[in-house]
Length: 223
Image 1: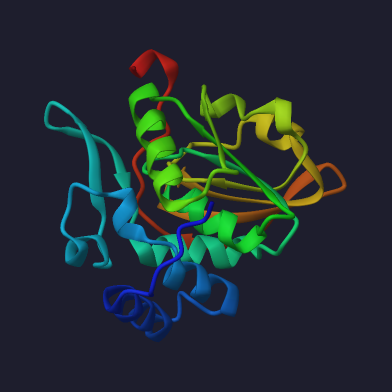
Image 2: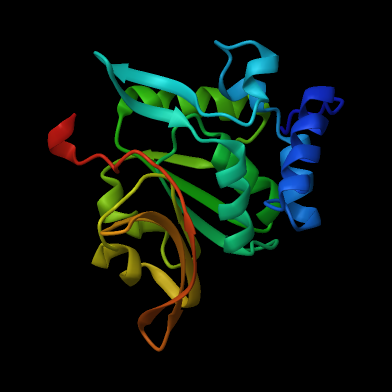
C-alpha cells in the first residue's frame, strides 16, 4: 500500500529549485518529486540532507564509492527525457536506493510496471525494504547483471540506466518494444552524456544528449 503523507517543506523547496533550473518541465515529474518520500530511501541521513540537490553516498568499497543516490537535478532531467506516461512498462538498470524506481512507478501508475535490476545483493535487499516502507510494493527488484537486462518481463516501453556504460548492450535493444525509448549515461571520448534514444525500425536513433557524471555500471567480476 502506497505511503500517504503530507508533502514535506523540504520536498517543496527542492522541487521549486528544480523547476527554476529548468530540469523539471512536466506536471507528472513535478508531482513525483513532490510526493515520493525521498528520506525513506536514505534513512541514514538527516531529512534536510536527503532533500538537497546533491548526490547521497550509499555504499563504499574501502575508499571507493560504488553506489549512490543520484543528484535530483540529473534524475529529473532523465525522467523528462523518458517522457513517461501511465501504463508504460519500464526497465531500470541500477536500482541503488530504490528512489528512482519509485519516481518512475508514480508516473506510470498502477496500469504500468517497473522492473529494476541491481547487481549488488545487499543494495537490492535494502532497496526492496525502502520501497516497501514507502508503499511501492509493485516495483520488482531483481538481483542480476544489469548488462543483460531482464528478459522475463520484456518487452519494455522505456529503459532507464543509472550508471555509465561505454555502449548500449545488445540485450537492452532486444528487450525494447517497437518505438520504445532508452535513456542512459554513455561514456564517450568527450566525456559522459545522458543520451536519449528511440527504437526506430529496429535501430536506435539518438534524440538528445545532456552532460553528466555517473559511476560506471558494475560487471559481475567487480563484485
